[in-house]
Image 1 (tube, rainbow, N blue to C red):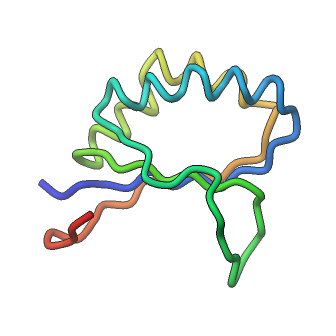
Image 2 (image 1 turned 180 degrees about the vertical axis):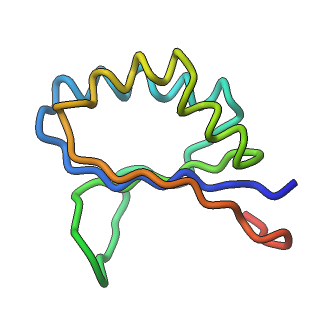
Length: 100
């Protein structure tokens, strides 16, 4: 089963509330097999809307990444991000032979 990337592009509008989101999101992601591979690192926007923060996590599968998003733990954390950020989030399945 191919791994999947959870890719978030974020503009934080309330750092305190977003910090509470981050405190809960990390453990929820880890609980579902996710691992951060890029978080608030250097980046270059070549096309599209620019967001100041980019986060990429790898999961064992697309299904596990999606289950994480819908889990009670992640949704509780996400309540802090709502109204505290502008976000785009996608889950992308890797091609079968991709290695990380």
